[in-house]
Amino acid sequence: MAGEYAYFLLERFPRISDGAGSFFEWVELFPGLRLWWHKETYSDQELLKSCLNDEHYFALRWIELRSRRLNNGYVCELEIIPDETKKFFEEEGLSELMKVEVNVHQLCSLFASFCLLLGGYNNQMRLCGSMNYSWRFITNPENQYPTKIEFETELTNNDRWGGENEIEAMEVESWESISPMIWMAGYTLFSDTSGRYGDFLEFYVVAMQTESGLERNVRFCRCLETLCKGFSGGIGENLRELIPLFLEISDSANRDKMNVSSVEAEEQMLFVQNLIKDAWNIRSKYTHGQTLKDKHHDKCIEVLSEFPGLLYWINRGIIFLSRVPTLEEFEAAREPGCLDWNLHPKWDPVEYDTIENSLYRIDWTYNPQLIEKYKQMGGQKEMSYLEFLKDFGDSELSTN
Image 1 (cartoon, rainbow, N blue to C red):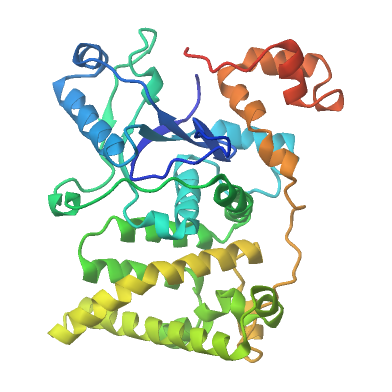
Image 2 (image 1 turned 180 degrees about the vertical axis):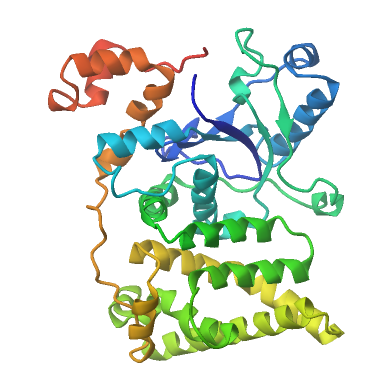
């Protein structure tokens, strides 16, 4: 398989029910971005033979253990293949609109958006290491290079291993409600030439990889700063005033849909403003080297417990706005206290059939001969890909 690709093992990621008494073996988050739950096991001899050296063998066993331990015994893997994303944009006529470079880094940022959308599931979710081959192919004798491992997050804080349980499975209904939002996030990310949405997601990842509470607070604040670049005046003041505009409840029509009263919305907006104020005050004292007392550390703990929820709603807001507002939009929203939530995105709504056509996209990579045969027979003009597979051969994932 040629081209750029990456494989990350995940720790503490929920399996997804298929609604028929079992679980999905894999799901597509967005073209070029898939999650796998692998059941394959390998002997020590097989892995020692495939790995570059003993160090990479032990590293592989370590990240395998971390992934299996809280994933019901399965190896959970994030697969990233940018060429699939590019091909999708080309076939859908979106290449001119999606101007942000498609690469592993950007698709990792999209995965971060997905993690934010999971809400309660993302408390201890981690990328625990990356490999140059998928878990199901690491012992393939035709591999061109030895298996290599790179660690993605800290591995020294063993206290966090105590008292944890396997995470609950995600019901298929929850997955189906989140899936269209991930696609909207992908379109927003790759069309955002300002780069602010990507920066927001990148600093979220950096924050979640930071063990120090004070440092994590600094990076959470940085997440907010990336969305409000270029304003004059105090940064903290601008954040308190502008960040709440990303909340859906700032708009009266959204409040009606969500069954939230104006009073409740005002209370939530005030809570967010105070949270940002507290976070920024702690950040300023810490970065300027001022003495922090016990009350500041206590407040930092309190702030950090609320920040993921705030970032969840900000991320939702960006997705439903289908953009990061410009400086002009923010300025126009100051007086009414609301952004324009009715501005039509630059792209047409993603159709359900497009999202469901994941077998077609995975076969771009693993069964290109089937795709070629499908196109020779007229492609989508003649039949759906599922109809083609039913009549002319099931999709089988290649091991080459």
